[in-house]
Image 1 (cartoon, rainbow, N blue to C red):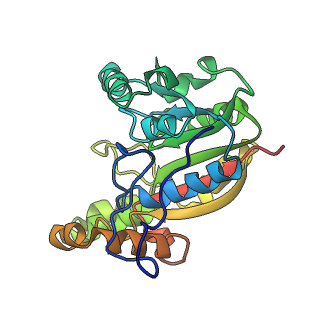
Image 2: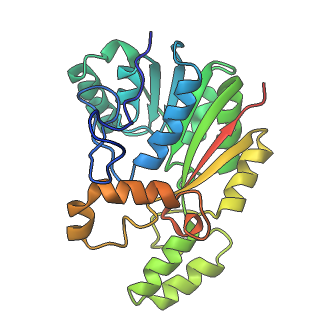
Image 3: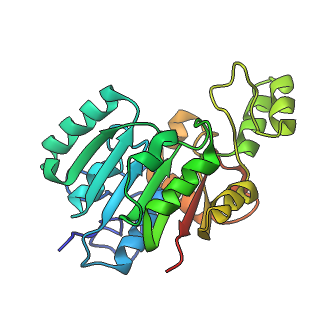
Length: 268
């Protein structure tokens, strides 16, 4: 039976504490941070829907296994598709050290080639984090994700937010770049920009809907984490995690987050 994700309160005390440091699955799991807590909370809710099931998970662009290894530790089978052989080598080492090498499979390839790498109707949960910003054809990638899902399967999609990029550039005095990001149809300031596009919540949701997925939740990720001085963020990390969670689904804070997390499902 798959083990659950340990994201709840620690034992002891009368109630939740804002200064606690929570853990992701398994004793070796990394601590939840303001950059991951909201996403893990959504994933936990999905896994809790089928607590005794061993899920087949596809992590596109999963790199060194920050999500894949904890999911494997929780008892699921995970395939990571990534273009970097170095990242996949690190993933394999990390899985071996965590004792889940038999549950993690590494496949070299990029998002644009996903349709040829994964069988249709073969996956219960897809993770596609920080991928749609850099691929050639995001619509094709999302279609491939939807096709890979079994009916009733879910997709966790994390994309770069446009509004945060505009505000960040403006606050750093780069008003010309901020203006370009605000007006460019793709939300980019190329040729020097490292991303091909950025999203707002409506545009990202429309992309998933066009592929036949039903968007169930949209959250902001890193609403405040990148705005605070390091001394504050590091010194009050537990409190910041809780505040990120509290603001993640609420406007206007959600829409100003550095990333947007969409959770969608293929209709059964």
